Length: 140
Image (cartoon, rainbow, N blue to C red):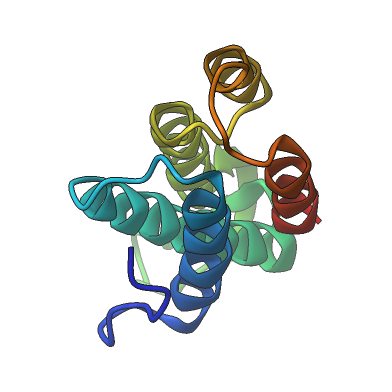
């Protein structure tokens, strides 16, 4: 699989592409058809990171205020706090996280899928230590 990411990927997705593809190429079981899965994985990772940055900046919830209006004069009165509303980015973050987990399993990037893969590699010529080192680097 090409280590150079597609030009249309964002900065974070492109960096993730380089790491994921390096791991997959070293593992030696990557197919051309996996390229679209990698693209989905790295774009979901970028969405996940952007959502997390937004949540860090704005919080998990937003305060809700209602500004009553004087019915006689039409003048706005002092805003009243009415409660909190969940930041919509938390749903985007959660969805991206679920997608990362699902796609990561398909690519062999989760601990369980790596364990399953290592069972398959027992009879193969792939250097398991190189794969393990690549995964450590990727997960750093």
